[in-house]
Image (tube, rainbow, N blue to C red; front, side):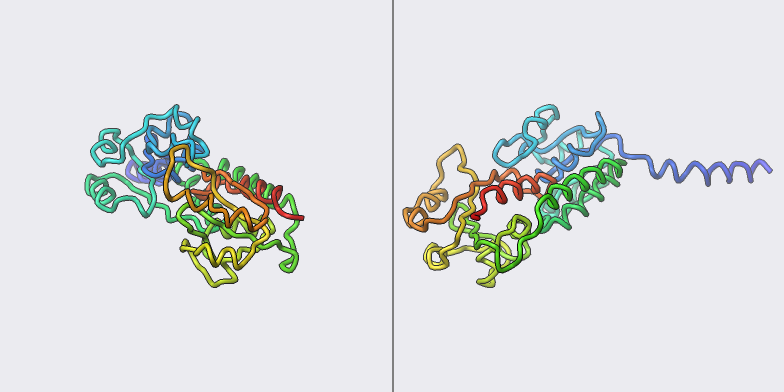
Length: 269
C-alpha cells in the first residue's frame, strides 16, 4: 500500500518537476538576447551577449544594460552556472559543443526569415522560459500591427530596392523581403530572381529605377562599405528614400512590425 502511495505521488509530482521553468538562463546571441529579455521573468535571465547593448544592432540596448554581459567564451558562460543556454545556430560550433560536453542544456534558434519564423520562435522561447502566455500576447500585438493596413494588390505595389553597405540586397527567403511585402512594396530583387543576401551591382539598381530605396541607418563610425550609399547615382534615381533602423530587422523579433510601420509611412502613394 505504501509503495502504491509513493508511486502515485511520483506520478503526480514528476510532470510538475519536469515542467518547472529554468531558473538561470544565459543567452549567447543578439537575437535570443532580445527574445529572452522580452519573455524572461525577473531574475530568470542572468546574462546576455555584449551585442545586446549595441544601439545600432539591438532594439533593446537600453534594457540590456540591466543585465551582465559576457564575452561569448564557454568559460565565462560556464562560470554563470546556467541551467539553460539559448543561442543561434550560427554561434561558434566549438563553443556550443564544449558547453554541451560540460553538461549544460543548450537550445539553438535558426535565423528568422519571415514573420512566420518570428511567431514560431516567440512560441518556442515562451515554452523554454515558462512564459507561453507572454509569448502569445507579443505575437498577438505583432499581428495586430501587421493587420493595421490591408495588403496592397500586387499591381499597386510600389517597386522598392533594399540596398545595404557594400552594395548588398535581400531577396526571396529573407525577413527583409517579408517586411517589404507586409509594407505593401514589391522587392526588385524578387523580380531579378535574387534569393537570400546577395550583391546588387549599382548599375543594375539604376537600371531597375525603383520607386523607393530602402537602406539601413548610417553607422556612427566611418566605414568604406558605407560609401556606396552616398553615390551620386542613387540621388539621381529620384526614388523615395526610407532609412529603417537596423535594430528593427537585424533579428527576427516583434520589432520587425515597427519596420513595416515605418515603410508603410514612407511608401510612395
